[in-house]
Image 1: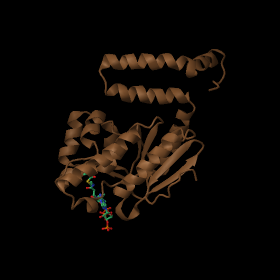
Image 2: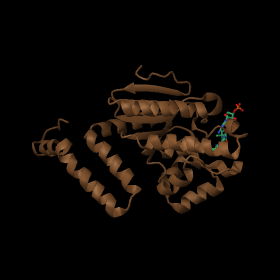
Image 3: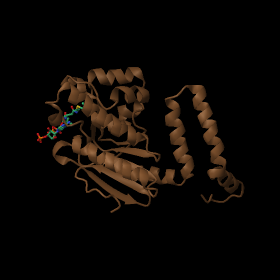
Image 4: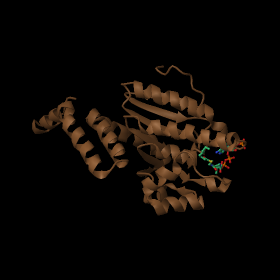
Amino acid sequence: MIFSMNYKNLQVEITEGIALLTIHRPEALNALNTNFFNEMDHFISEVSLNKSIQILIITGSGKAFVAGADIAEMVDKTPADGTKFSRLGQNTFRSLEKLQIPVIGAINGFALGGGLELAMACDFRIASTKAKFGQPEVNLGMIPGYAGTQRLPRLVGLADALYLLMTAEMIGAEEALRIGLVQKVVEPEELMNEVLKIAKLIQSKGPEAIKKVKHVTRTGMLMDFDKANELEADFFGTQFKAEGEEGMRAFLEKRKPNW
Ligand code: CO8
């Protein structure tokens, strides 16, 4: 075991450079509590330091991906504690998003509230036909607190985001696909095969190119367009010596690149 902490709510399996993280809190449909965030922070930091992990897949155990933040833990919070709990989750999901490697959400079941916010911090999402998505916070008289109000409109556009945020409607996988919240929908028994197939496909590409494409795309989205183009050009340039020369030579010589 390369992870030094013994997790209670996280299960980690690493095979051939692919880490599979399963959120596991069966008594509460994997709802996110303080312990989850402590473990997740530790896990993210270990992954960022572990050069042998090239791809991270996140899923949930049982019938839920994650059914939200833990309502029982939140109910008695003061406004100041609520803000603190929100910042805790926002920071964790932001550091997940900032991992250099691709992070794929394998959405097996309910992805609600904080669960959808976790899914949205992944680079893209593959869903089982059984997955259900929603931001039900207004049902509880609350609003999202782990950047749901920010990532949802960036992913699906303002009107679809506000529709989901205001109605708290729980949508199925096909509807999530239609609005661009997930990128593929597969039968439940095919979910892991499909996600592993995609992970292996990404692994076959230039590893530095994959990290740079993530960094430039994600960072550029938060920047002025002209500045973002400069960032792209800089990284494009550095990639020639990093992997590009070999990749292009391999193409011309009709062989596999040796990165
Ligand atoms: N928190 C705590 N416990 C939960 C949660 C949750 N979010 N979701 C489910 N559980 C528990 C249930 O209480 C139940 O426990 P018990 O067996 O002890 O009664 C167990 O999990 C199983 O759940 P159900 O019996 O309800 O299972 P069903 O299949 O009947 O229903 C649902 C599944 C539809 C997913 C239902 O459980 C549900 O509606 N859950 C709540 C969904 C929700 O509202 N999520 C949003 C929470 S708020 C949020 O995420 C805000 C994020 C930002 C926070 C910012 C910090 C301040």
